[in-house]
Length: 182
Image (cartoon, rainbow, N blue to C red; front, side):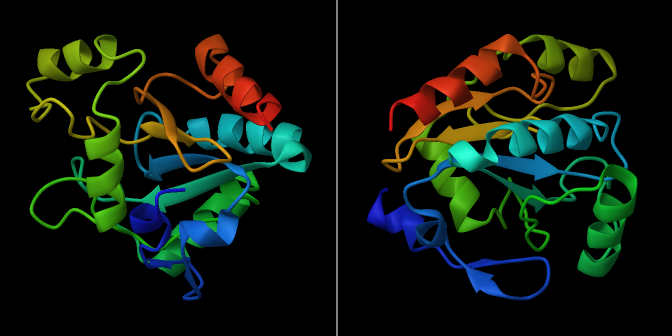
């Protein structure tokens, strides 16, 4: 893993400090999440993916963000409670961060810089534009539930559009390929 990315300080939703280095040797699916979004039901698919592949080395890391129409207004304890009671989430949740703009978290600044192109990009952008929602500059996170896949070696392997769900064959093939790569 890139020393710069692996050393970025992170805070889990329970206040414990962490970094991607703490997950070294595992395949990571990093997702910016929100609890009041039309895509929120993706928590269920992410949990299914996590439970299916955790033993093989997959970690889903969720980062709540309130960057898109105020769809993650809650405090960390409210978010954790919602995820637990609504979707039985067991994968790691982190404290709320910003995933774009002037206050972008260093992790997301690095991820978007390393992997500006997105698998499945287009339909979500068009849908948002149709609602008059600005979609930002190329390379920026478009909306909640955008996903970054990081291999065991720390390389950012792929980035998936928000509407590419966990069960989408493009995402599952990429995750299974990364897990098989050892």
